[in-house]
Length: 100
Image (tube, rainbow, N blue to C red; front, side, top):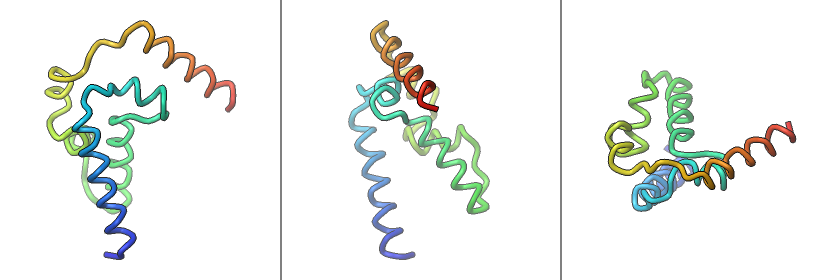
C-alpha cells in the first residue's frame, strides 16, 4: 500500500470518527451545507468495493459508515427534520437543479 493510500485511509477513518462523535449533525444538515451525507459515503463505499471486486451491499456499507446497523442509528440519533431544514434542503436542491 502506498503512503498516499495509507494517508487517505487514515483521513477517512478520522472523518468517520468525527461524524460518529457529532451525531447531532443530521444528514439533512450535511446535505444542505456540503451536498453529501453519511448515506452518500455508504453509496461511494459500495461503488468502490465493486470497483475492487469486493461484494458489499448498501446496508453493509451503511453499517461501516454508521458504526452500527442504520436502523439502529436512525432509532437512536436521527431527529425529525425541522421545517427550516426541509426548506433549506429544498432550496439547495433547486439551486443545484438550476445550475445543471
